Image (cartoon, rainbow, N blue to C red; front, top):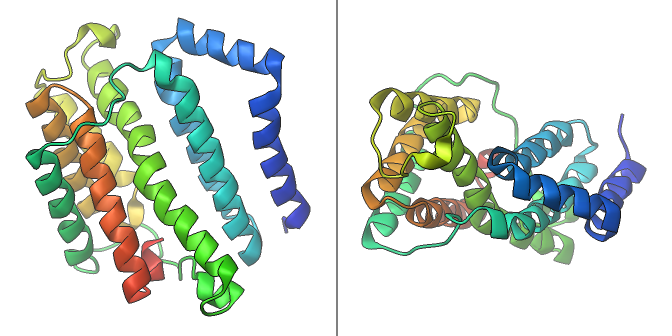
Length: 246
């Protein structure tokens, strides 16, 4: 069973990556040379950390999530110069889509079969004590991570890269606003299946965000909608103590 020292190692790795000049130069060179790498790297690292998070002890999972969030924030900072479309945009469509997807995500829960067994989720009060400072720290980091970090990480991978790459290998030559039915559906289905506990809501979510990108011909509105959805969901989880959504 993986224990505390590995959590410390993971956090140390984040710090090491951020301060190793040789490694940073290599990373930035790869980001500049490969538009695919710039859009895959944050999502790939985040996904790998999420996978290994399940191997930790109950307490370790909480600290590992914090480390994962810090890593995601650092990667987003690094790719800013190389992913020009990763710019937040606010519109009434983004507000409607974000709130609508939140309602769908919560409202459809339990009304269709799940593809994986639903676990108890991450309950900070059970782990650190009701109303504890550590519990609130985790809640703040988790809600901030899912609201600010997850949207750009997922949107640049699914909506900027994957959707266009399925149509053209030279994906940058394809406008974000171009509609391609097959890629529209396939990308949304993949997005939904990456949320196997709530895959139907995930597919509808993918369709909504992709439709927003096509309508506005930019990525920022989908990022904002995604952030609104996740932010509302985070508040709802804490309010209702519906930890299974984490």
